[in-house]
Amino acid sequence: MRITVTYYLDVISSWCFFAEPAWAELKKRYEGKVDFRWKIALLDKTGLPTSQEEEEWFYRRSGTIMRSPFMLSS
Image (spheres, rainbow, N blue to C red):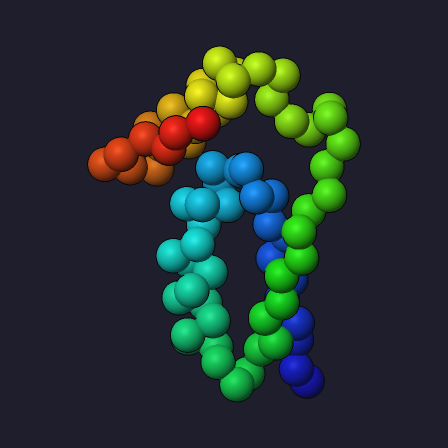
């Protein structure tokens, strides 16, 4: 049985940015055994930051949690 893994990408999400190395590793590790696909996640305005300051806060939070050596810029 072959499985399909779909990655729903939110193009402004810092979590998607930080997940990219894991996504690449999964694709490499399971190449030929798993079908990997991605789709753009469609969000309405309730799922988006309400200001640049809020977006920067989200980026700082995820950067800190991931122990990133740099911070994303809004």
